[in-house]
Image 1: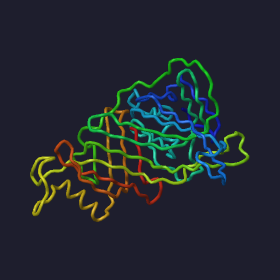
Image 2: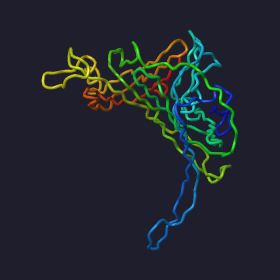
Image 3: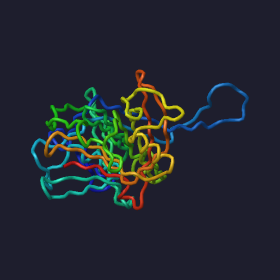
Length: 329
């Protein structure tokens, strides 16, 4: 995939470009659909009536391991391997040259500044070329494992062509892992036993149509019109002075400090800064921060006989850019 210089202008991604070829965790899922409208009728008869195709849609989803770069630093031209994927989910890119360099991705302020991608999906000898692709990003963190990023895009399918492709040039670097001191914080509190966290941009896509597009699909472009980013995590429970995952709270029993913090912030609707960090070395650290998170749901769970809190949260904003940030440094 490659970022387009203007919406829908084919960016011609190449498999030989390691900044455009993506190393996927599993095969992508491509969905080509038709918008079909039944013409209806007044006759009393069973079965669907005749109709016609009113447009074509293309959707692709894939997952990839989140990694940094092979060297120990980022530069103005050495970017994270998934930079194009994050940018085209209505996230703006900011490069800082201090220390070993870093790239940050945060929500765009103006829909007119949103970027789009050209995606070429090659399967069974066929290239499926989509332009004007925008979508959603999701991040999954599991204790001890590398971060996983999932993406789903919608765009305009422009060609389906039989093509021979050479082996792609893929980035090669060890992935950071979500484990170790400082791996998860709620505010300044970092002692929570959290074993998984998921987060998504939750962008709302609008399909703009017109009777006068250059393609015959009727689709002019896709816009991201709104977002409601948020996620959830599971935190182990413990009795006061007791072991994690042991015991049941009852009369006269109160959670330890960690659970007390979660319960208090959920009950009062207090804002919290949530931060999750996966690291391996310089040039290969990944940080997800929700600056103004509010807990919306709390669910008690049983996991193999142990008790956990399932905490759902929403990332709110004062301005769009401070809702959340993804940092590679």
